[in-house]
Image 1: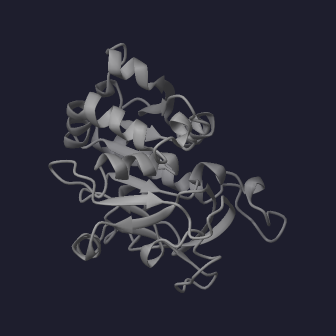
Image 2: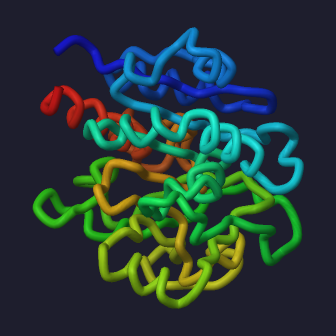
Length: 265
């Protein structure tokens, strides 16, 4: 097929759309910046695309709660289109504010009613956390990986975070148990050796260090860290030290999506 088409969603307060679009461009896709009003009005349609990316930022000023207004807007204005998009085997990624939106809309962890079962709330530190963190990728081997986006990634990766409301919490123990049982926990905060760790390695106090999850299909993925901010070695804070590859580890996430779409459609 031709280059996969990516809808990079933007609205009031989005501020990582350009970087996200560029990451998809470097991965081999065609990315288009699309305002939510264009989708709601019907000027643009989700079925024109194979990938939906909801980037970081502070949509609608994070009023009410981070990502909540955008979550409601998409859930109640575009619910059918979103469910059709997922049902057709297409991909969705939500980064930082986008992850908050996916969780608060019920698209993650995901259920038939789109009932909210988890949230991303104020960091335990009660302040904005803006730095690089270690992440442990769960079950990324080509044969056992559930999440399309993280197949083949190293067990431990290093990506930046930048958020004030990134603490992942669940409604109850049953939701957490289901996430574990279905292998929907994709990345966890860790120390440099890959061991579970508390603050500052876990920058927000997330339940069991959860930094990103996927839905049961493995095609809808949300994470708080920013892979689009590490697509080239020069973006790494220690790039002068023994980095032989020009590509940053974040680029592999976008490449996985492109490869998946090219094989499926």
